[in-house]
Image (cartoon, rainbow over all chains, first blue to last red; front, side, top):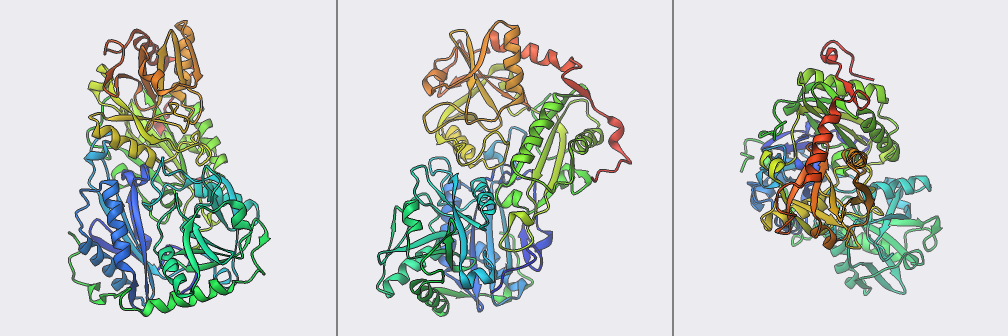
Length: 312
Length: 312
């Protein structure tokens, strides 16, 4: 697994029933997925030829489709799984990152009635990458707690993964200005939520906590909560204030693109002794060991690389 | 002016320095303008061969570029005005709707550092259209006050026009479910904000009010406030509660794509006597009369249709 230095090259894309090089994958500007961020997505990864928790990702994606009322997508979950396999098979990689996107589509008239749209399925597979650098995977990330507030659930449901992320953008520029590369956002009550593409965990007084509200219900988050039991660690969802996060003994981020990523500092204050802590390390080992578990993994059907009908 | 029945046909598009049919205009999925709604836009219209308040639109767009820190766009305001003209000239229309979009662009690596992106300019021109139907322009729209909350300014700055609009999408489906086609959203305090692509005005006890906070600072809104003085109407920005909106004597929406659009009912309660009121009608007349004012309009340079360098 590596940090891809040239995002957008060397992948396989899928749109409107056709596969193509990822670098050629473009979305019509008329699609409300662009004009309104009216879309939802999920991301799943492949490790040594096996999808990790594909069923969980597909179930969450399907929930998103229902919440967004994408009734005209034309792909059921089996067909969507075929597209996942089709992308990875064409990529021909053992380790891959797969993106699944449903958009509202293009409306019929200029008043843009959302009910007139034909929903669209887009997907891509890239060589597996992390959302932090190799050095940060090893030694930890520097993050800030942003002043920009997370978009509240009353406005947009954060449990449906989506690209309407201007709050994350504002927070990231706060981080850049403060010599950090990542930012976590607070909610209206000042409690910790999430960052761009990741959940966050804090180990405090022996309890491993992750925010319970206003965040994506991450599959890696779920996995970590399950694994914490194996370590006899009290892992659970909870409200976490900014000060509680700053005072934690260990902090890490979780994401499909990276797994468990240690945090080295928060607002320039070093977490613990500055190195990834023992619980973070032990969870990381267990997390990757799970990738051989037949109950949680599904082999890629590499035979779907050619001659298969992609359209529903 | 007509409601375009086939959104996406018959226009001219511009991306990466090249003009093309609008139906072929696509954005790379790697652009953070798609993946994060990290973009800003402005829309200006052309009436009888003249841009209306082009300088105001370009100034607002430039403010957006600065707030978003799009430092690598490669187009100054003169070059952007040339692209506006280039699109309309190639469209060859007397009446047109022009969209200007700046996006963050595609990052260099998979960790998607926003500072590594080359910003992108996208534009298009379509035959002038309204965002409501011809029948609604004449007789008024049915709107609802949505339960979905408008994304608060603390999360995303609403004065920079952007496509991160899942709150509008949620509100629109509330409208559809209640047999209306449009929705206005409230803020966290229960005060009126705006709808998808429009500001709102309410005439109450002789005062013409429009929300003062948490909304786009619309150019049509500004024009209406200026015109209200000519009618000896007390036009101003103010906090408006949902009940105050429901009890208004006249209500209308303002947008570059449509101008002044009367509202017939709110949450099924008829506004006034159900027909566009006298102030709404008089403002609409004055608004279109302004389109001949040389101080507020700029003739399209139709000679920019061919043989002009588009790239900065």
